[in-house]
Length: 356
Image 1: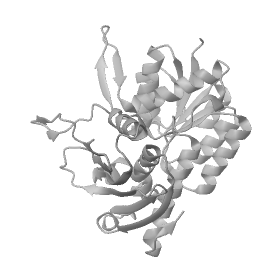
Image 2 (image 1 turned 30 degrees about the vertical axis):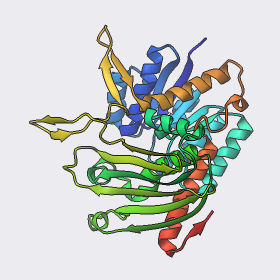
Image 3 (image 1 turned 60 degrees about the vertical axis):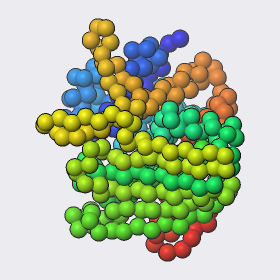
Image 4 (image 1 turned 45 degrees about the horizontal axis):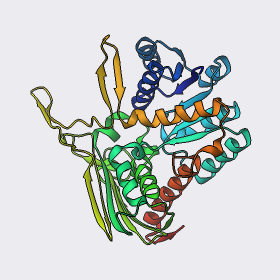
């Protein structure tokens, strides 16, 4: 089968993961990585050299000049909507980094356009592809955990993420930058919609550093099944913390308990020039093949792999309706995660329980 032709918009930290994943899939002869669009000249030059691709400063020029089957979007949270709509209206299948959009209206517009153009949209909720989470989903689906009663999920970034990584931090929040991953994960695990949200948060440390964003957000979320899941998200862990993000799950059912630390999976390294570090090789790993070429793996690659295989199925004449409900993170799933994030903010602002 002819390789599908894919381009990327946004070549920053996470866009580089997209490029590596697509380069790996190109090596497997499933995709042709064609081009990257980014506003920064240094990003374009580095990506052009590393990945041997065409580069553009204007994504619209790239869409007009290149013959593409699909586009992946790894721009800042608040810039997904316009790019996604233009790609969809050009008939391209689209993978969008989370969140799909930061508004319900934006998510619904993306869904409406994709249905009209009959194109496939996937949101990169890559926590679904973590092999530990896939096992948990299987145990719950098979009923071996019994009825899920309550649980906890935490994702806490080191403070250098909001203060050094980006210049747009004040345009997102712990709920949108971190929380949506886990709002989606538990909706997928439970196969249940959110019934109500009560949340609290505080602005202090980051606000005093000139970034108007919550230090932390904690949310108690009740699902239609009656399960109560407590989400903790923050962006103020000390810079000396050995991982970029502290994260994990605890789930209690009537017939089982699940606990996993997805920050520390047993590998700890201490180096003279860096101190203690805890790598997450399950998320992303890089090695070399017998010819010395890089090999990329991990669930950051697997999310792109699922997208590419879906587009290949469609290009062979398959239908979007062939894809089973819950088996991939759809635009509708992106909408529901955004609804929860907005309810979290509404609850913080009002001090009330928000019913969805």
